[in-house]
Image 1 (cartoon, rainbow, N blue to C red):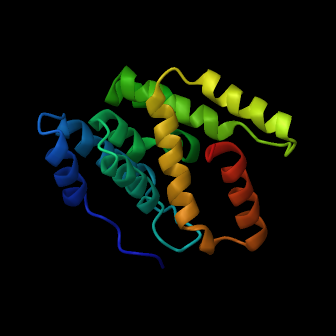
Image 2: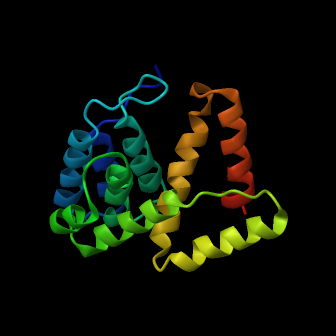
Image 3: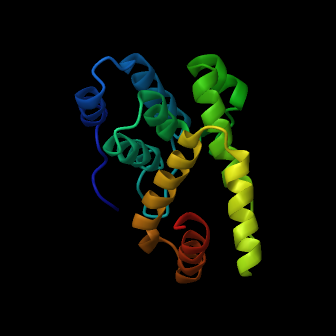
Length: 172
């Protein structure tokens, strides 16, 4: 098992410290929704899956991003990994949150296949062309950062693949 999960209170206090007028009801709702949606799911480390979106949200809060972006950090895997669809996210959290979650989900579904430099560059351009809100990229980078921090829990061949993809696509 990995490190202890951060608490809602510590996330709340962090966001509150730099955005005192932020919609903390949105943050609480996103926390509870994501925790419930990922109930019973487990990461390769043995930690509850919810520890991942919570850490992604924490990274975004460390970057002092707006509460919508931090909420998306909590929700970023809900559409991909549960039975929740994007219209439900929009219905509960509004179109701004829904739009960013949808953007992160679309990026996650693209499969990067070729290692050739030209292909890598084209893939990066495609990724950025798909994005009309920079927060999509920031959530995806925070997601990748947390996944890189927890690579030790997956087989070495997959570690190498993810590390190479990170160097080729996300680092630049």
